[in-house]
Image 1 (cartoon, rainbow over the protein chains, first blue to last red):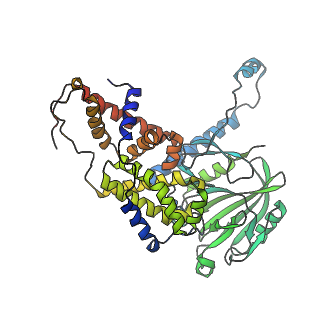
Image 2: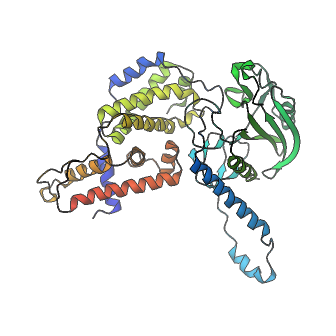
Image 3: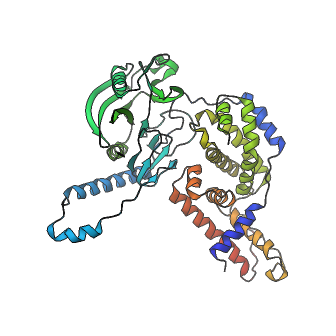
Length: 294
Length: 182
């Protein structure tokens, strides 16, 4: 009988056999087709479609949400301080803190992850089953490289360092205004037109003070009147207008401007009118799990 | 990978993309051939993957992730080619060669035959994990990232696939019994 090591050795050796060079004819055929193959422009996010949630996944999220709520409930109901008799035991039972793993791109297993990209400061976040990560987005469903922004009813959480904000999210072309400081960013978002705004409201997120806005676009909004037929809130920092956050009809983006010691960090929770209650509950639990590192 | 080339190709620079395709074409084709086990299918899959890369390149936000991203598109093209062709369905069974034994020094050949059979019985999902991990030496967390699957799924697929391949190898060690072509 083969051992695991032996099997691995044989498989590796077997895989070495095979072609290693792409025939020129294939390469030529590809290059010949380029002029007639249009590139899909990344004028807005998500460039990757968020799939509809299937029933099994929805049940998984519901189950995970129930577990999270149960754990939170138990932790709230449990005594917060050790009794006198527990003192010696609690000293020895203190767990050694372990650093959460970095959230990889693609599907995520349920658990707590560390995110250090697309944020001014690293943070940890806990996701239930059925979530995936793509760039600065954590969302339900699995990403794919198809276009069709916001098709489907998935929910997402994004973090976004920005330097500019559009003055008008509908007539956004040429409307950039600089928003580098916390005060400028909060003011620019409060004054942004093009969509419905609720707020600002002072709150807390991830252990820091934050200002909360709710941006929404009604289902009957005529998006065809907007530049390139979509609404856009801001581009990547720079500004790099190749990428930016859109908002579309029937969608609500809850935007937090988190005050990280004087610097403004955006955290966005997006959902659609058609998003399921389970998805929305999961999104709320993911938002509340954020904890910025000191 | 030269991220400057990627950035230029993202902006529609065909010359930059040609350089990228030359640089990436061989490794993509090598991987496709090892997953599909068929030269024609591998060439078609590589061609489709390169065109998909060109088409979707502007949507790649981080040019430094080009390699992992290109493997994801390649594996997707392998799925498409696999579906299109019935030539290598997992149900295909081959008769073992008569007279093949470990005693005559041909055990390596026998291993390869058995591996080929065992591998063809695996799904593209499982083959992709085996090839990326054991051929490209990619750590499993990067395999998971490239394929857009959780790390646990990548681990479990690799385990399942290797168990199947080990069983295929062990089958060769058992007394020969002719398989029936179905």
